[in-house]
Length: 81
Image (cartoon, rainbow, N blue to C red; front, side):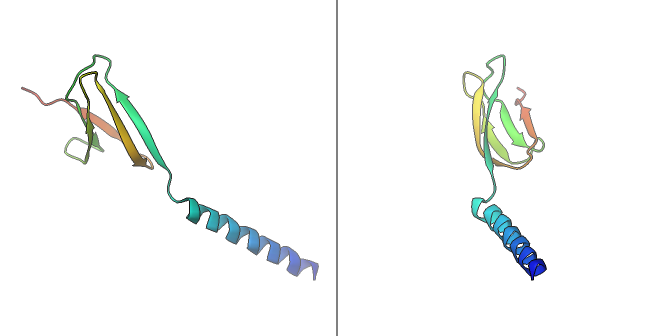
């Protein structure tokens, strides 16, 4: 009898933990990129140049990237003249 109660308690605990993860969903992050020289027009890509464009720096050399999920590699690229 005691074994069944412990087993039931363990199952309830595992289900609760699994449901907690499902309800909260995927975490997202906001990252602010700031280029030291204040360079405008730096395009920030996901993964590599040519990947998804996440943003472009403003006149102060800053851009805020919102709703990033998981591990994201950021790559900056300046268009050559």
